[in-house]
Amino acid sequence: MEEKLVLPALNKEISVDLHLVQQYSLAIESLMYATVYSCLDVAYAVFKLSQYGLNSKKVYQKAVKRILQYLKGTLNYSLTFGGTSSIMSLMSYTNLNWAGNKES
View 1 (tube, rainbow, N blue to C red):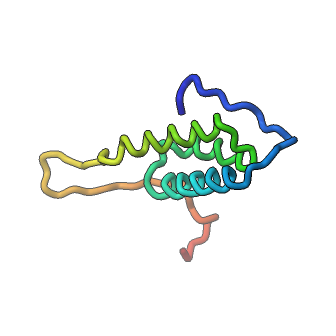
View 2: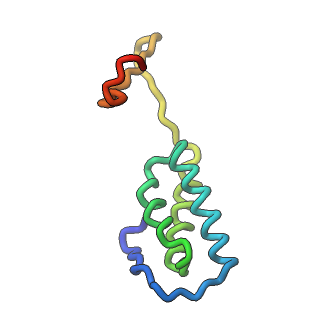
């Protein structure tokens, strides 16, 4: 999100425009899908914006639009592996032990 964009606190008394709420919810849903499968760099911003579902004021809509613009601008970015070796190996580490289950 933009550095200077400050999101106001949730308002308990909300006047709801259902069309705007639906548009906002669909945009957040699409962004959540993107964050889970490919765009982890915007996950925190999407998580924070998802908390404002019924309170979808202009400032929140502006933040969603800014994230969508960022994603549009980075469509052609990719992670590439290179080097001098023709054989490439990928190593992964985890601290997960499935609660000590020896069978799985």
